[in-house]
Image (cartoon, rainbow, N blue to C red; front, side, top):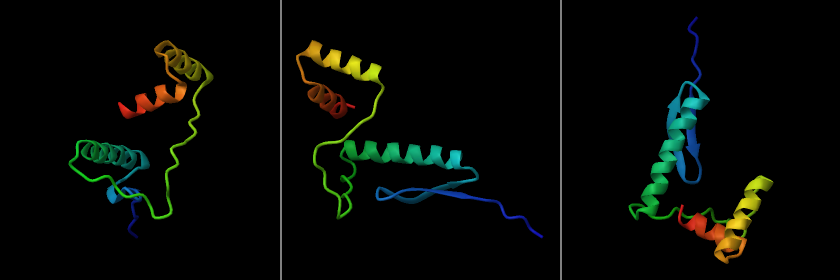
Length: 97
């Protein structure tokens, strides 16, 4: 009797369909992360169009990020030192990332 080996397949809908496979979840996760980084770089470099969001998804401009109290304090202090609100500071950090 032949023993079947398990294979894992990676995808990141709606950005990427099934695009990689491997013998372990970790192997596939590593491959998928590299593929996603390349896709994002291509979009940011203008080599690819920005993917369309799902039909039922809209973006309000607000999102909640959970960080440690220490990181929150450091970000607030840096924003204050720049004369910015914490929102302005975070928006600038994200836009230049």
